[in-house]
Image (cartoon, rainbow, N blue to C red; front, side, top):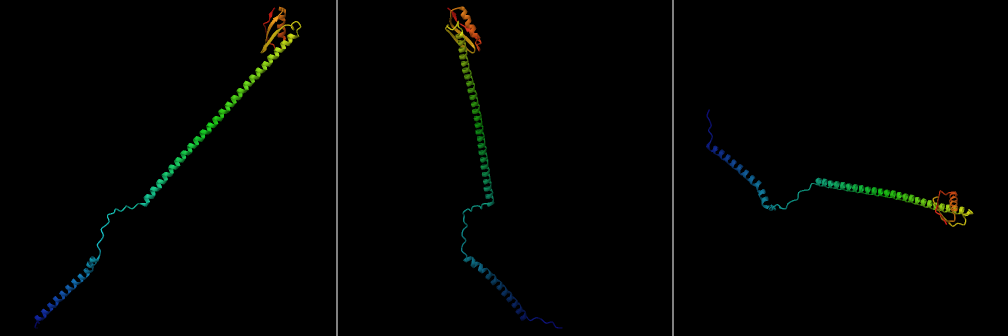
Length: 205
């Protein structure tokens, strides 16, 4: 059997076709890459320049929960302080009221005691004065009785005698004409009711 040898022309054509196909494929890939990158470049070129970042400091955000807790704690502390001050003021008012009440009671009691003492003293003085008045009346009455008894005696009625009395004690002064009359005067005076003693100071002339 006879082997067929390939024609040199055909081999050259096949190789040429393969190279052409590879070249077209490579060009196609390059165009696709350029097309995809082109819009991005255009967009970069058309986009405006970025403004520089502001250097102004931004205040840190406040924690509302923490602020609320602080305000609540401050309000509670203020309320407790007000309550304590009100309680202290109430205690002072109670103490002052109690002290005033005690002073009023003490003053009333002291005034009552003074009134009682003054009343008792006035009563005692009144009684003493009454006793003195009664004694004076009694002394005067006793003196009158003694004088009346002496005047009734016929032998003594003409004598000038002085009679004084104090608490039942009778004192006789004056002059008599005889010693007998002197003794009789004392006897008559002693016999009068209410006379406790007789001091005869009469003289005989």
